[in-house]
Image 1 (cartoon, rainbow, N blue to C red):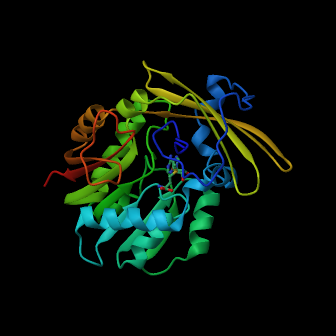
Image 2 (image 1 turned 120 degrees about the horizontal axis):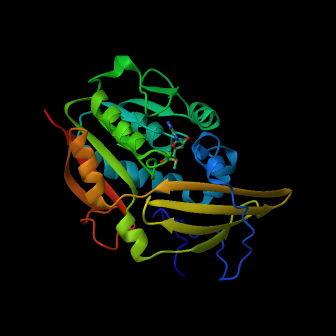
Length: 282
Ligand SMILES: C[S@@+](CC[C@H](N)C(=O)[O-])C[C@H]1O[C@@H](n2cnc3c(N)ncnc32)[C@H](O)[C@@H]1O
């Protein structure tokens, strides 16, 4: 059985049960104004439930091992995980000996991250990735932007602004690791409907559409579970590797390597996820 796939390219672990075509799809259609700032409220306990099958410690450890391999930095190096969500990578990177800052806009997710542990070499802060602290200029050896944490804003200029912020807080020669959906691959294998059940028996059904002009992938999710009925919509602007490399170059970040997700093989035209390694110009 094919593993459920998130439409933005993130692959779902198969421990949730997947249903056949024709599953419930009663997602509410929100007007564009209601959705433009979806990212301000979407990332909460509901998000953790929706993607629960994808969050597993063994998988996180494998990803962190790959990230460390790509970075090749000594212990004590300064890393920024932005946005860090519930801290699944930040926590393991600090455990591995790095000095880590995690930034996220979501108060509930930052709270989850802190609950897992914070301290002298692992600090969490609530902030908007478009405006990182002014005192962080040139501070980091590496910035990590993982799990399609990009393309959220209504105005594409804000995506460019995020990359400029990443470049600003990197030291010259520092590295940005960017991981997320690859528009080429997502289009090549477009999954317009998908569904699975979470551990508490909640059925999650997603219906996806794509607008080639804006590049927005819109995902309408409907949850039906014990005592739970909710419909939500979110959207992400997907980029091709070419577009993203150009956007990064404009911010002073030069893509040196491009992989098929966390695998040690080059990104291909059917890669639904990509991992770009970009270096700040010295
Ligand atoms: C798909 S999650 C990924 C989080 C984390 N990188 C991971 O791998 O689990 C995207 C994250 O982006 C955060 N986010 C959304 N908009 C943001 C913004 N403007 N500034 C900072 N974080 C933001 C969300 O709160 C959420 O935690």
